[in-house]
Length: 283
Image 1: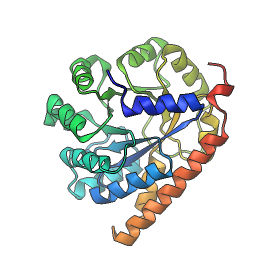
Image 2: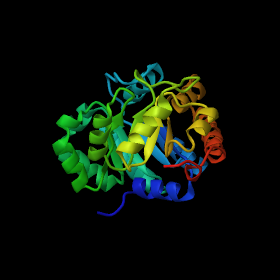
Image 3: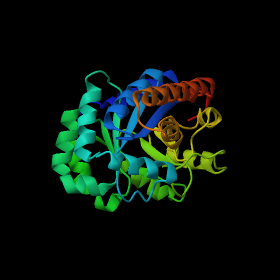
């Protein structure tokens, strides 16, 4: 099987000893046209992988920032089919690796085979179905694999070593580690037990490790250098969009949001380059 763009990007990061930046946006907030502009701005600023959140009416794993973004996206008429079309539009000008981040219900409603076929044709590289358990995922993983899509799963601080190994065995592309239990959202500090989780995950898997939930500051990214392979930044970016478009989604507001996102990711990327390299830390 040919390597996906995700696998290629993480291989390049590992070769360079660099920490990657995975940037999350809620697709359709405030519109799909705006999301296209934001994705291209973030890719230009150095985001290594983009996660496109499919808006859902009951986003239980998300904190208030992304919940409100999901509400705005649904209000603007965003659907899973619309997000897949957005992927096609992104692919006209960018090769940035793309992950579809969705609750399982929209995928199930479309049909797993139809969804995977459409995602592959559009140019997506991987899928993270946030509320799908490993035990219920066998058919889903088989179909994604047949369509050359990485199946990405979540590991948590509460996951046992045995569970982490099982999650890793079912995953491809990278292993997404939740830095803390609870919902998404920017935090001031990283949990004290995060290094231990990363060491346990590293022992359980050779997959790249991406850490999300609460990553928002350059200092967070610097601390992850040498421990993880990537930092996932979501709520902090979504908040920039909300702030810039609070008075309406005018062209000037969209441009301001894109500029703010570009600055944010450049600062995070600079912090990633300035932190410890994977080469400086024993595996």
